[in-house]
Length: 158
Image (tube, rainbow, N blue to C red; front, side, top):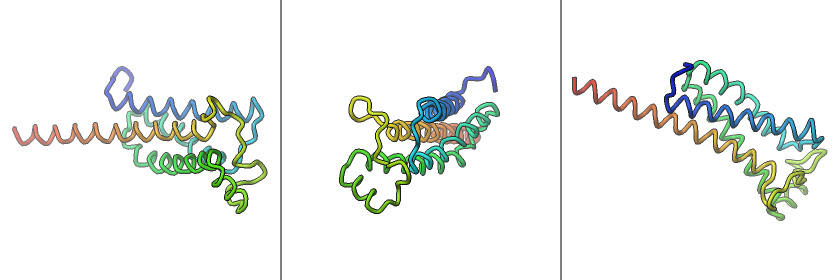
């Protein structure tokens, strides 16, 4: 594994780095800066943290089949992040969420601890991380399909 630089290995490594940065970033925000996560942030963490472990093990083992386990976690996490971002950014959605209180607990899901350039928030950063992981898994799937198709053609020619 170490020393081989196949494109799928690089994509797997990139996905692992993204998951690590997202995990460490969320821990920094809550444990160092003291920002208390809302319920939706907790759900996003529940889905991101295992990706760090799964992708790390998969990278060091050279196991691209991990995408079967990674994709559901990343897609569900991305959906929750998108919903959370909508709650924060669209006032009507935020108001509806607080009235029903389905997504909010002690800390409001509307709370905006981080607001860079007036639109980059914690849920948006989580969404970007999930999208990057999904993109890496899709890339790996496409590369494997290409290599499988190439092997089939080579066998037909032989």
